[in-house]
Length: 170
Image (cartoon, one colour):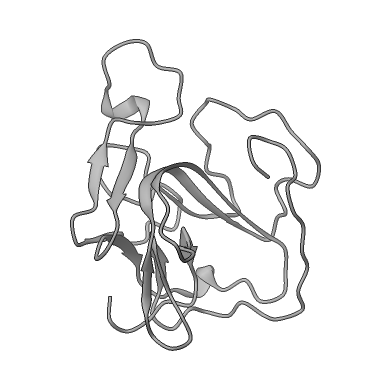
């Protein structure tokens, strides 16, 4: 879905198992071991296990997302890199990933930590890392990953926003 409109759909019977080296936000690792980095802003990065949150078109919201029982990761939305889900995963900054006041929320007053924020990931070397944990394993069940994305530049090759394959070179 892009801005609430379905742009593609896919199914797979391949299990997404516990990522052995955690989850990468802003970086992907190819099967050959090379790294690809995203450049831009990310806010309200939300991983929901056991629920396909959207199955039809919807009206995109400008409100902060809310964690619920199936939320396993909720980050990139405040004045620091933390997981605001009940799981409280450690979120580690790598490279020069920074906190930014740029965000999708309709805020007219001065930015405040309670109003939300985003992560700015400037490309090569910059990303966030969440250590491996059993609740990040989906198996073959339903799940949802959503986030607000503002792409600053696009490299000639793809760059994943969230990569569950992880790697050992954090």
